[in-house]
Every structure is written in structure tokens, then in C-alpha cells.
Image 1: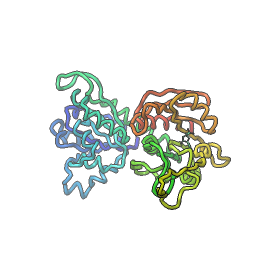
Image 2: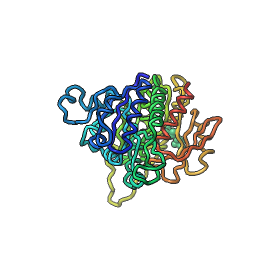
Image 3: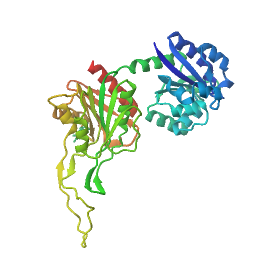
Image 4: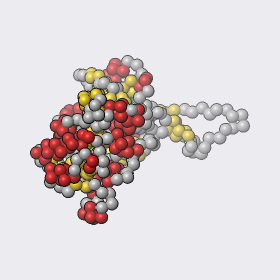
Length: 395
Ligand code: C5P
């Protein structure tokens, strides 16, 4: 396998397992370059690591020689995957908030490559509310996680916190590399976020969509090697670097941006498009009149983007997927929607229990012949599974 891993070894007792991890990766012809934190050097020596990896070990942000030969930005970009093992509670916390105060954390902040972490820490640290919070943030950011396992700990306690075994980490890395090719050569279109329909130049009608599920889909498609165009309404999220972002406001603009695109293999409409727009938005800010009579607004139907893409006579994407946010009869409504819109798959979610803005989603995947309930998952995990399924169907 012609792949390269940048391994960041954190300062925990599980660091000793990284020697075996490096050996196993090398045996599979996966290149390994290593950064060690200062604390990691208390557990394993750079000499052992360099002997096994066959490469110089990097550990100093301010090393003049290293910075001229292989700067920390270059170091972060020269790999296909960054692996943090053991990912200590300290490293997780720094990654979650973006602290960059040594070579390891600076590299993690500077990288535009996918990151896999193998957490390892005492069970109480693992269960601490701060670690839970940090992990949720990292998962929402699209960071991949392997482990930890349950078992005896070096500190004498028992529970979750043991780093995944080297071969488990190797499997996760290999799985990642396999999935990184799943959508290679495919062009994926994703719509995300809410639309805003103007009432006048300062007011609009919109909805609660955060765009998180759509942005997670864009990130997952990118990780699987696709060319990704993300047509997005106004959200508070940063598009993953590498994605072509087209920002829009209204449903009409979203439709125009979508139909403009050619040769789309897979279109996923995750946007929460307003069903109606204001028929005649005022050109100037509407004023309260002397009697303060509320204005009446008349609405017109917005175009249905999913339906338009699904029923296009020419240039239809090979696979078109829609979402259905429902508060009742989730599956039945999704099946009807599938027919009405003419798409190939509907991802139906029950929004009665507050999905908007959260990091979790529980969906049913509905096609013309199947209904599959999925467990409650992180939105990034939902995204990965949807795209794995789409990749299979596209074959
Ligand atoms: O009709 P409803 O809004 O329930 O359908 C939801 C699905 O249709 C989502 O995939 C959404 O992105 C898409 N949609 C659309 N254009 C609309 C309304 C919904 O693309 N005007």
C-alpha cells in the first residue's frame, strides 16, 4: 500500500504500544513519520521510534534544522492520514479548542488531512464531563476515533480507557484507506442549511436548520475521494477545506446553483428549503404606519430542488438522495415522499425530539424496496454510512 501516516505519539503509558503499531504499519508498506510530544519521550525513546520507523523523529517546534528541512506545515500535509496514539486527555482537550503550543498540537491545527485518534487514559478521565464534551466536539469536527477498550489499566483500575491494540488501530487505518477511495472520481453535490426568503431588505423567513448534517456529508464525501460541491444556505459552519462551496440565500438561488452543475454522480439534498417565499418582497424596509397595523404577507411556492434534480430529463445524477424531517409517521411519510419526489433514497429523521443544531441524528433509510432503521449516531457517522451505502449503489 502506497500510503503515508503521520503518527503523533502522546504522553501516556500506552505509548509503548506505538512501537508495535509502527512495526505493523511498516510490514504493510505504510510509510510512518512520527512526531513525539515531550511527555511521550518519558515513556518511549525517540531512538526506538526512529529505529522502527526508519525515519527521523520530530519533536521540536523551534528546531531550526527541522523547520528548514520539513516545516511543521509541510509535516502536516505530507501524510494521507494523521494518527494520534495514544490520544491523551490533554491532547483531546487541546485539539477540541485548537490550542497549538508544541509541535504535535501545532501540526494538528495546521493539518488539512483526516485525523484518527486512539484515546487512552484513566477511566475517570475518560468519563469526565470535560472529556465527553471534547470528544463530542472532535467527532462533530469529523475526527475519526478508534477505541478505547475496556479492561485493566496500568493505574490498577478497571474500565474504559485502554488504548485500542496496535492491530485494531492498523485495521482502522486500513479501513480508512479503503474507504478513502470509495468515491474517487465521483462528483457529489450536497445542499445544506436553511434558505432565507426575504420579506424586505432587513427581514426574512427561515428555519432552524444548522447545516451540520449536510456539512458532515460534504466532509465524509471528501474523505472518500469525491469531488464535492456544497451548495449551502447561511450557516455558522466552516466548509471543509477542499470542498467547492457555493453560498446562497434563497431557494431560487439554491436551485439555480444546483442545476448549473454538470456531470453529478450523486446529489444529496440535505438543505431545509423553505416551502414558501414571500410573493413580493418589499424593495425598502417596511415601516410601521401610524396605526401600527401589521402588514399581511402573501406567499408563493418555492421550487422543489430535490424533485427538480430527481426528475430532470437530461443530466440527472445517477443517484439522488433526499432527507425527510418528520414529527410523526416517519417511515410512511418518507415512503410517500420518495414517490412524490422521484428520488432514489430518503433519509428520514424524527425531528420531534430536537435534532436541529445537535450533533446526533437517528434516521431510517428508505428506498423503493427497503426500510432500514439506524441507531442514534453522531451526524458524522450518519454521513459516513450514507455515503458508504451510496458508493455501493453507484457501483
Ligand atoms: O418536502 P419536504 O421539505 O418535506 O422534503 C424534504 C426534502 O426535499 C429534503 O431533501 C429537502 O432538501 C428537499 N427539498 C428541496 N426543495 C424544496 C423542499 C424540500 O430540495 N423546496
